[in-house]
Image 1 (cartoon, rainbow, N blue to C red):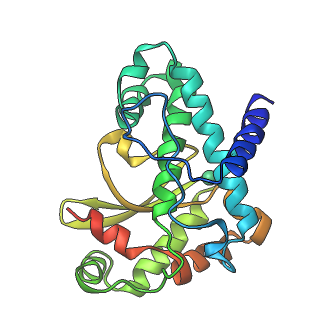
Image 2 (cartoon, rainbow, N blue to C red; image 1 turned 90 degrees about the vertical axis):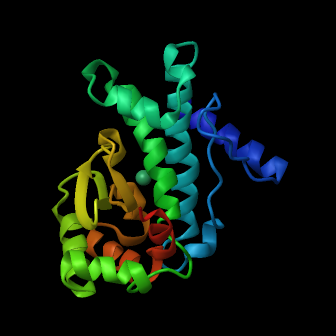
Length: 225
Ligand code: MN3
């Protein structure tokens, strides 16, 4: 109910102000919501503006609100979002903090993992990396789709760089590779809220659409180490 009211007010404030939410450094408290890197409707017809609005303003911003409530006036306020994720990951008594912090980070990363002109195979160095690591782009595609289908409940699919190789892994709920100091290149949100309004129970179709029309290889390329 709290989140509900908060989001409503935020939407109202956003509409009235007519300006984007300003991004700040991740060490600045309270934590801020980075702006979407594109408009709500930019990913149509693949992801509807309706989903993007709900996903960004209700889900992403809800996690941010919880994070700020949980950290206000505590020692967690003094460290960055990434540090909170690492520090709270192994502490069962901080599960709620971890979940909200990780979901804030994961969603910001997910928005960047898509682009209105994305999709299809990568080029250049990224294509070479994919071929070295998976055998071919087609094999990468199969493995990515299989990881997405195999995540039984809510979760994420990640392309991760480990030394010179790329690997695909899925995580459950809010779990994120950065909690273990690993280096993701991109991610796909496979929680039902990411696709249900457009795809209902057809997660496989959503994953294919992500790979064929949305995946942002330029972003992944920019993160290669
Ligand atoms: Mn989500």
